[in-house]
Length: 70
Image 1 (cartoon, rainbow, N blue to C red):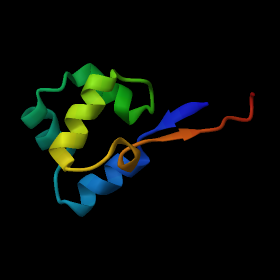
Image 2 (image 1 turned 90 degrees about the vertical axis):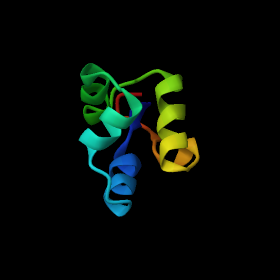
Image 3 (image 1 turned 120 degrees about the horizontal axis):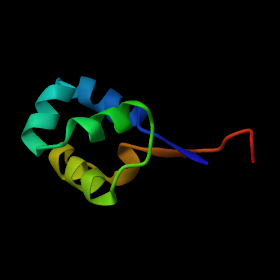
């Protein structure tokens, strides 16, 4: 399984919030933003801050995606 943040990027577009604005508002490290762009794991605390910022549930910003390798 791997993580996908596709829902988060779509939600940002719908709310007309740029990733840079979210990063600055939440004080997210640039390395963490890179991990989000690459669909890599980030700390749950970061995801919860994003949820609070976007006023949504964690399932609204990420999905667990099955990989063929399993």
